[in-house]
Length: 88
Image (cartoon, rainbow, N blue to C red; front, side, top):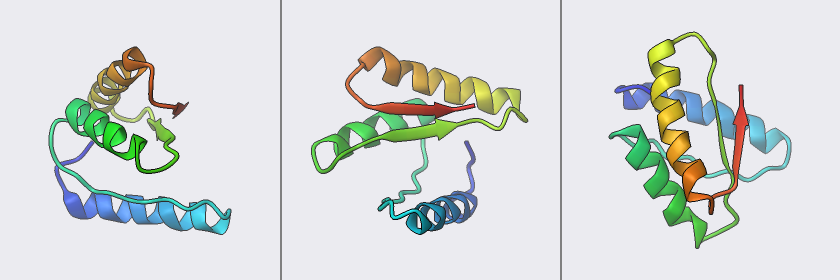
């Protein structure tokens, strides 16, 4: 959770590069907005286009970040239609 799109781009590029070394094709998107709405909307949009697995996690270093992400993921869990992997 960050307001800096460049930070998001750097982090997502590292993740994409890592996955590529394990023969996993990933698409990265850096979006701004309220996490709960942006994560849910994007996951639902991707759902019909390809196999979708939402992977998320927290580093436990920022209680506010963990709280916001936790509320966002709770909404997706309640929906129940989006495959989800949570790393903690």
